[in-house]
Length: 372
Image (tube, rainbow, N blue to C red; front, side, top):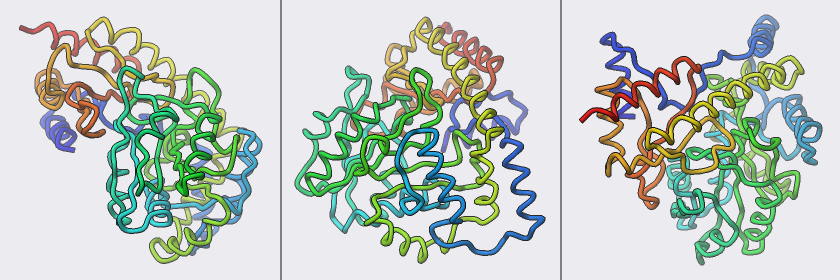
C-alpha cells in the first residue's frame, strides 16, 4: 500500500506510471451486466434480499457449476456474499474456534491471515518451496498439519504465482483434511482465468471442500463487491446465521446485475478477455527471463507473475521503491505474500494493462537494470 500511495502521488505530479502492482484488470464491466443493473434500478429492485442471496442468483451459480464445470452443486449449497472477502470472513468464523490454527500457503494472499485472526484463530504459514515452484502437495500439507490445525487454505489458480492445482488432487487433500476433523478451503476466484488447461473445480471431484469464488476477476465486477461460497449443506445454516448478523444481505442491485454474468453474451466477452490475458502472459514469460527476472511458479492462471529478483537485489521492497522512482514502473514486493518463503527475493507483476503498456514496462525495466 505504501508503494501504491507513492505511485499515485507521482502520477498526480504528472509522471507516467505503469501500474503493474494492482490486481484489477483494465477491462470495463461487461455491457450485459451494466444493462441488467440499469434494468433492476428501473424496476425499483433495491430492497433487501435474503441473507444468503437472491434465490435466482443462487440457482444460476449452481447451474453454472453443473452445466459449465460438471460439478453437482445445488442452490442450497451456495451463499452469495459481499465480495470474496465477505465469504472468507463467514467461512473462517464458521470453521474456527478461538485458538484453532489455520494453515495458509506462504506465499499467498495477504489478507487471509487477517480473516483468521478476526475469527479468533491462529494463522500458521504453510511454507511452500521454490524448488517445487511454490506448488502445494498432499505430502507438504500432511507434514505441516498440527494437533490444533482445523483448516488449510489453498488457491487455484493462486495469487501471487498463478499456480493451478488439479481438481482431483485438491479433492484428495480435502478428504484427507476431513479425515482429521478439518476442512480444506479452496479459493477459486481466478478459476475462469486458466491458460494451459480447461477451468476445473474441486467440487467436480467431491463435496468435502469449502469453495470461495467471486464475480470480480473473471466477470470483471470488481467494484460491485459480490462473491459467493459453496459449502457442504450441513455447514450452510451456520454461515447463513452469521451473514444475517454481519451483513444482513449482499448488495441488491449487484445481485441483479450478476444474473447477467452467466448469459452467453457475457461468457463470450469473458472468454475473449481471457485470451487477451493469455497473450499478455506469453509476452512477459518470453521476455522477462532475458532480463534476469525468471518466473517462479507455473503462471497457469490468474494474471500474475512471481519473479525472482535476487540476481539484482537482496531487498525486493527497496528494489520496487527505486524502480518506481527512477523508471515509473510499479510492482509489488514479496513482503506482501508471506514471511517464510524468503520474500525479499521476489516480487509480483500484475499484467493488468494492455500489451503496448507492457512492452513499455519491459523497456523501462531493461533500461533501469542496465544502469550502473
